[in-house]
Amino acid sequence: MILLTGFEPFGGESTNPSWQAARRAAELLREQGREAAAVELPCAFGRSIDALEAALGRFPAEIVLCVGQAGGRGDVSVERVAINVDDARIPDNAGRRPIDEPVVPGGPAAYFSSLPIKACREAVAALGIPVEVSQTAGTYVCNHVFYGLMHLLAQHAGPRGGFVHVPFSTEQGEAHGQPGLAIDVMAVALAAIATTAADTDRDVRVAAGAEH
Image (cartoon, rainbow, N blue to C red; front, side):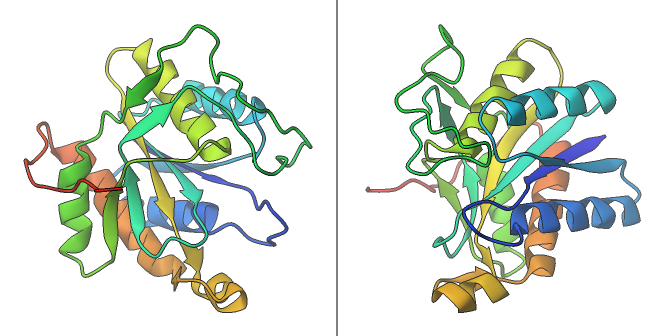
């Protein structure tokens, strides 16, 4: 079972491509004969992890792929690390704006994705879709969920998980003068990441770092 999550709209947007693409990716995976489900999370500190934990209880997932919107980025970003800090530049959808607060008090400083992030990057690149390994998931609700996911999975042997950021949709990008990507293209990339993660035990050793 592959579980994908996306977020509800936030920051004044009427849609969130992370949810649209996650839902479509689950459909693509089911068309391939794989068990897959998609769940929409609230864009709110605390409540998002509660909803994620409930979804993990509903679906016996072996791979969990959480997805968020990163407006301004041009590539699908496979995230490497989640850090134990909430530092919100803007309020979440519940009006909360934590500053320098831990995601999990007393938790580790960071968690690495347990997905084969470089193999996933290679799989998406082979499809001609712009993709990168990202070294930061930010400090907003996306990182909050990524850290919460890895903290939950650390308590249960078996499931593997990670986080992917997607750009604005094509329409959003045009409206904001920023890079954008079609939802169907995002969905193909997410399905490739999910299947690669499910079928790969050991990551490939290729350079995908950053100088800044």
